[in-house]
Image (cartoon, rainbow, N blue to C red):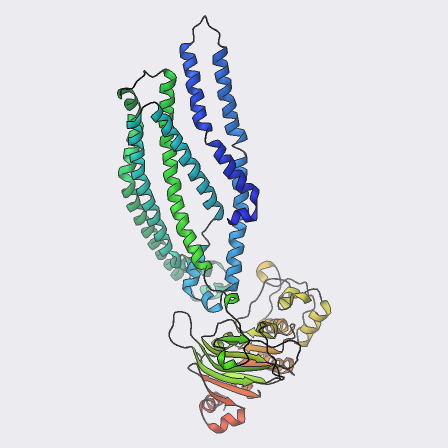
Amino acid sequence: MILFRLEKSPVVILLLFSLIAVPVMPLELWLVKSLVDHIQLWRPSESIVRILKAAANLGALMFINNIALGVPIPMAMTRLMEIGTHEEQRLLMHHNASLPLAIIESPTAKNQYERAAKVSFSDIYSTGIQLMQTSLLSITLIAMILLFGQWIPALVVVAVASLLWHATGKSAESIERTDRSQTGNRRLLRHYADLMTKREAAKELRLFGLQPLLASRWVQLHQQQSRETLLTASKSEVRKLGPSLLMALLSGLLIALLVLIPHEPELSAGGFSLLFMAFTMLQSQLTSLISQGASMRTMYMRWEDYNAYMKQVGIHDIRVTSSESPAQESSSLVAASASVNELDLRVQQLSFAYPGSEKLAVNDVSFNIPSGCRAALVGHNGSGKSTLVKVLTGLYALSGGDVVWQHSDGNRSPRAERDHMSAVFQDFTKLAITLRENVAISELSELNNDSKLSSTLQAVGSNFTDLDEQIGAAFGGMEPSGGEWQRIVTARALLRNAKFVFFDEPTAALDPAAEKQAFELFLQVTQGRSALMVTHRLGAARLADLILVMKDGVLVESGSHDELMQLEGEYYQMFELQASWYR
């Protein structure tokens, strides 16, 4: 039990006091019977002490029920809701962070996450306790009714309630299935709403007048969702209509059943009051039982969604091997010991396919980047460059082959490759936090090392000096330009002092002057390090020690600029095409 592991007292209190509350209702009914019988038998010449005692007993029991039992139960439920909500979110975030990037990026996983987020540990437990309590109360009330020989009314009530239980449960399942099917469209609705309300798309919406188009799509999709929900709800209500009407009719026929059905011995006023209240309460309890049962069916379906998402394999579940023979290590990731400075990257017959796709996005790629070598990865859009980098950085799991991080002395170990690398991506994260935190997220141990943070920013050419300045206009902070952001994230990557640095087209959004500075910065900061830069700009690629050329997921050429130009192959054609723009 997740909640019990987190905090035992509210779990135990809710269970214990709910069980204690079960005999209170039948005892209260019996005291009402006793009070009514005493009043019926009382004569003016007699003392009213018995009546007062019966009334006092009833009042004391009601006090216990309302105060002694009524206060701890809601307090325990409130506490369970607090710790349950926190744990649900914590577990989902932790698991989500462990999943391979290829899974996170898929629409299926996004839908699964949204459905998993609907689970409520506290609701499952509290509704289960209520279901148990209501079941015990209903059984007790039926037993009391049978004690007076009223088995026919009891049988009718239970039979009709059973029909309604079945219909309501089916309706709950149907509604939840519809809700499941609408998950993707709900995400799309939120996307449209974000486009119309958030800063990122504000310029284009106003410049091109897109607001009416997006608003129209939002309305159409919302209406479609509403129609589907209404249709499902209507069918569900029709399914429940017959049993609900029968249940309602019982309320009107209850007194007639009690009066007309023969019984022995003759009922006293107190006995009749007890039976009447017992039937009324039984109907109420059965109605609650039906509602709670339907809720539990819905929660069970959401628990299935939660379990399905949590069973997704995370990156920590991927086995890492350190065999002496790389050829025997299918889909392995091997990292080198940190005790040696020189680090080589060896890629052997690497392949990768996106989840659910049979086509290989990267196919049988092999190359070596020796220690201190600065390599460039080039190719047309869709050639597999960024996918390859995500595999090399461990963000995507290999479909086949090996990525071997090895030192010049041949030492290798199963340590995570992230201990030795850093990266700057094209779509790097612009965090709305302080400058200090923006740089130090790559090496949190340096968060308060002002001298190192400042020197790293200075090394990449940043003019920012106030480490505690807030970044992000949306939160009242400064908004760096594209080139300034480039320097911040480059400082973030270099702070780790990693032996290998990846640059995945980080200059794509920069103007020519800023781009030239970024390339010069790349050459400067990777001096003495191994590096791989993905770029479309072949003028920059020619400065690299090694150029790798991708086409349709395959490595088709590799070598220096001069060597590739002499081949007059793919690289030569790309270079000549770009050069023609400047002639």
